[in-house]
Image (tube, rainbow, N blue to C red; front, side, top):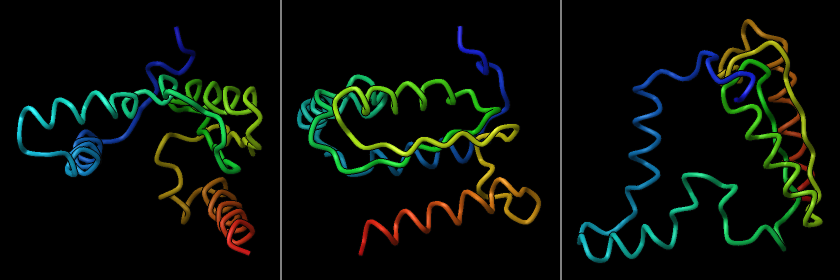
Length: 124
């Protein structure tokens, strides 16, 4: 059992919208869509990806009060095991959508600055 399995998470409407967007590029033809789904079925669970080798440097951030926290940490560990450079940062005491709460949460402001720094570094 995951430690934060029952932690509050995103609103269903946001999850639904994200899911619709994620799969919207698939074919409307049922046969073609089934073939495409086999090719990308691991999108549902990144730990099932066919390979983790050769990826660029990754930044993995987790929220301490998030049902997906343990999965994020396991993902980062898997990346390190295959030689990927990973920055892992856990923001304790905050829920999954904490990055949208920068007006109230110092963790969100730290996250935004950290991510901006990592992106800037990657692009230079």
